[in-house]
Structures are given as structure tokens and as C-alpha cells.
Amino acid sequence: MASRKKLTRFEKARVIGARALQLSMGAKPQVEASASSDAIDIAILELKENKLPLDVNRIKK
Image (cartoon, rainbow, N blue to C red; front, side, top):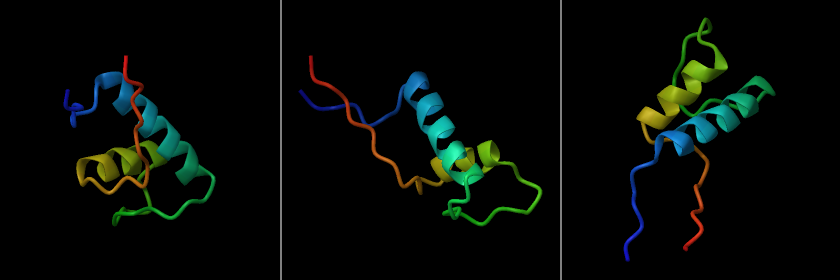
């Protein structure tokens, strides 16, 4: 059975939250963002541009 490549809404929320925390702690953004953008906006932009430096591991049932 092939794994779904599309993230569920729960996976999206988890990944965006984790990346936003990293950005707020000083991680370098992987996309060009204005200085007025907050960490969540940058994380969403990274997700849209497929530049998140995170992996999602799904447990097979």
C-alpha cells in the first residue's frame, strides 16, 4: 500500500507549529520573507513552497 503524499490537516498543524517554534527560537527561514512576517506566516509559506526542513513519519497499522 502506497503512503499518502498529501498531509492531513492534523499533520499540517503539527508541522507548521513545530517549524514556527524553530523560527521563533532563531532558525533561519528557508524562504524570502519580509521583516514584518511572524513565525507562523513564514512556516506556512515554507510549507506552500515545499521547503520545510522537516519530515513526517507515519506509523503503518
